[in-house]
Length: 143
Ligand code: DQA
Image 1: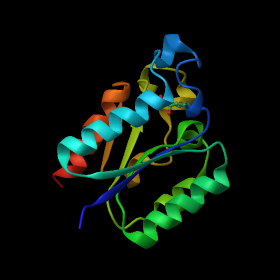
Image 2 (image 1 turned 120 degrees about the horizontal axis):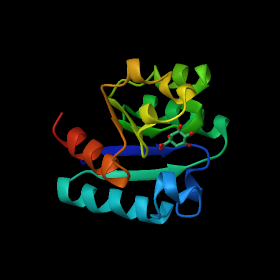
Image 3 (image 1 turned 30 degrees about the vertical axis):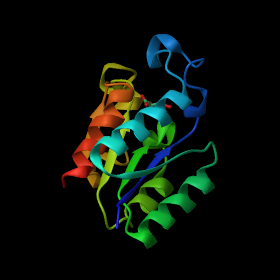
Image 4 (image 1 turned 180 degrees about the horizontal axis):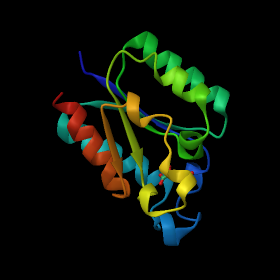
């Protein structure tokens, strides 16, 4: 059976392309989905790429991944730095969690240097734009 990786994106990531292009680049959310699908095909994975601005929906998706034993690539956006609830949901995963950020959060405001997710993730990718998702998928294809 092919392994399905959930690629979960949090608030404001649906606005990629128009949102602060100096920070996040000009690639759109649709480009992000397409890049994940390309790499999934290359690596023999299935991907299910989603985005939500609702914290409750994100927590539901993490519960679903926990119940299915699915690996997760998570860009929790601002919830990374604020949400114990998203961390508690991600803590229930039984397959690897990879935390991804498009921008290099460590080169930005200090409030972005704190992550509620990094210590429960097997890997963290920052500052590589869409290629960070590609790297995370390639990593998950061989663990
Ligand atoms: C982000 C970084 C976060 O600090 C920010 O709140 C985002 C996007 C990134 O992908 O670089 O929404 O997760």
